[in-house]
Length: 296
Length: 337
Ligand SMILES: Nc1ncnc2c1ncn2[C@@H]1O[C@H](COP(=O)(O)OP(=O)(O)O)[C@@H](O)[C@H]1O
Ligand SMILES: [Mg+2]
Image (cartoon, rainbow over all chains, first blue to last red; front, side, top):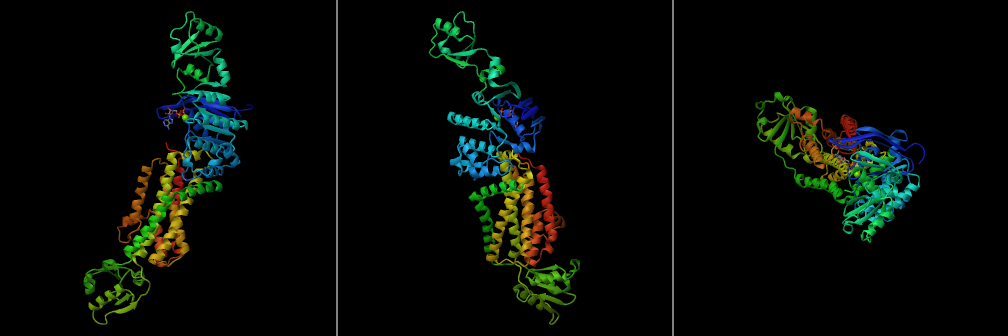
């Protein structure tokens, strides 16, 4: 993460008629990092990355790749995995990859890409006969056929089961280890927290906050959270000097002194068998910044 | 650039060749059509007799000679050279020069024999001088087959390409391609080549079938005919691409394509000659590439034209192609609005 940013987004605006999908956002994507674009559905993440990728025209604003207006060089250097993308019928996985492979000057070793994306056994399979996760891996493989310097992944794990998601995360880690820049959009906070070095949180077309996940959390929270099912704590103890919130059937106690809080709960006779202690997460940050739950 | 065109071309060909149902339909439908033609027209019936009069149309006066009053005879004004050629290949039964007292007849034509007997019956002995004009007959099937081949190229090129591009755009495959270095011109070239290969393959197959089954007439240059087919295909694909440049709905694309194909099918002279049609219809028909392709194909197949004879049509087809490719490339969008 040194030197000038690989990508710079300046004052990006996108209106779809009356819908103001992106409302003048600016950010830099540092080199060789995993950059996360976070936000709930409809925040404007896909619109933003598709403008960067050059497939959606911006209403105004500009995108600079290596300091210059993104153009032909950017297309050669970038790899894109769309949130949804159709492929040709009747073509096998390998043939699809070979076709995209031949569109680029820079070319990765196609067998390596197939191995990376765990597609070896599916090479001869018709595109239409892939499961959701397999298809997602093929879309990722297509994005990697040109050994891209910068890789865009739009909600790559949406709809995957937890095991497939973990596998996908490992794959992304391996790619990142090869000194690539990855731009990942997601509405899964734990995904961003697991993968991203740097994040931008978007809501309703604007950036709510940006920075490294840990730094952001440290800056906002000195406390940790104690969670108890509401049923186990119908009434708070008297003399309980902590912020408490009730949401989703849980009582959240925010404190910088967990021992003290637990002692008071225990003295008040609350059952602590189901007590959960956790640090603040990006999800909490988002909720506090926007008043909205992230997952809709 | 060539690499990218070939990549798209190869994938499109695979997709097409493996889509057995569509492929079968693309080959079988025209073959069935030709087989149907063979069944219908192998009898060779006729409704009336046709006699050319070598004089200007306004000078024709049916009172001039009792022969001109014969029922079920059409008398058509025509210049001498054309009239004799048509008698030779059985398109006319007889050609008559009233002033010179000469008539031309093909001694092998049954219609000619009949027309001649009637002429003799309505004239005095020794009033006419008889001139033979020989040649192979041109039947309606001979005339129609170039039309059928052309019509098949038209449907294949317009619908085959138009629908595919619209489907690609609608389902987002074009959007995926847009994120690569592929340029519109390259994409369009690949589509043209892919469809050209198919159209030419099917046309060759049909051509061979019609030669075998129907013994269709072929007098002129095979190479020139091949060029006509190639240019006709490319020009029609270009029109298909221009129509599909922005559309995202298959229904709209279908409507647009029908809007073009139906008038073209009726007015390009696929089924009947436009020679007798009003002037404005003939002029209108000139906007269709198929008209020029069929004119050229018939000149070659029926009258033995060579490359030089059909050069004007080839140039027109090239011009149409260039125009629609320019329009298509300028209007082209990878994704819908
Ligand atoms: N093609 C479009 N036409 C009209 N509105 C759109 C279009 N694409 C996206 N939007 C709207 O723009 C907003 C942002 O959408 P999107 O960028 O897809 O969000 P996200 O990817 O964060 O879920 C949403 O309100 C969405 O309804
Ligand atoms: Mg999205």
